[in-house]
Image 1 (cartoon, rainbow, N blue to C red):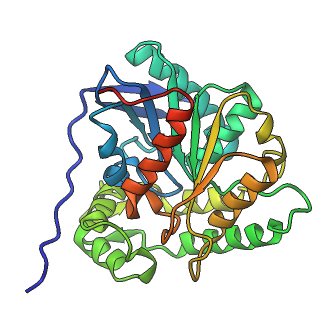
Image 2 (cartoon, rainbow, N blue to C red; image 1 turned 90 degrees about the vertical axis):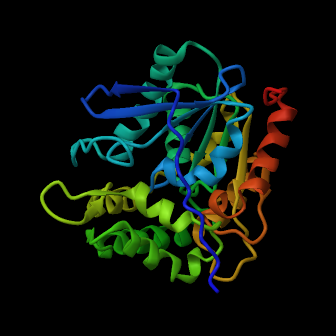
Length: 311
């Protein structure tokens, strides 16, 4: 008898607000959780969608005022197209989204809890435009190493590989179940909590507006572009000077076949003296693999900053 895999369902938000970026791209905010708790904003990695992180952020709902958003051309946002889908514009989006959250839901300090792409964007925005999210928690961020760091060549190769992989992704699927089956068959995704493969497929595919089946919400060429140009070495050496508490939570660097972001996160923490925790037996998808352990580390850090979930 086969185990029944649960169907993970994203709850309806208590409020929704569509923000127009300066170039016209629309970013949809969704508010969940406890409005009496500390406000925390969450976003995702390249090619993904924040709905796919439900196993993690659902744990925050009882005690936090949760705001979710997808990066441009991802998730629930309407496609804006290739123009502006670059690191400069995504970094500016980060600032505009922060300001838009206050307009939509009222002014209040906002914790930033960002994975991968969104974490890099938040770090870049803090350096270019001044810190906003506070504290700032970054999950396995692939921040390009400073010039001369031993990991520089490793990350350059990793980004080339990831861009090539993105360009080889199927553009369409007959249904979400076929994508979920593809994901669940891959060894790299075997640690995901039950139901996460189906959730991921539903969160990152949309019905094909021009025909049958489903297409990627983030077109593969746009995903590849972000990987390809994540090569700014000026962020790493200045992060320690950002005037907000920061915390890095990384994947297990002792895991066979581990990808570059885990080593970058550990290396950044050591090099810049940023507080850091590693989650054992996890990959880059640590929030979907060990959500309770990740939450425990994040809340321990927040408690040290005097931030506590609402009772």
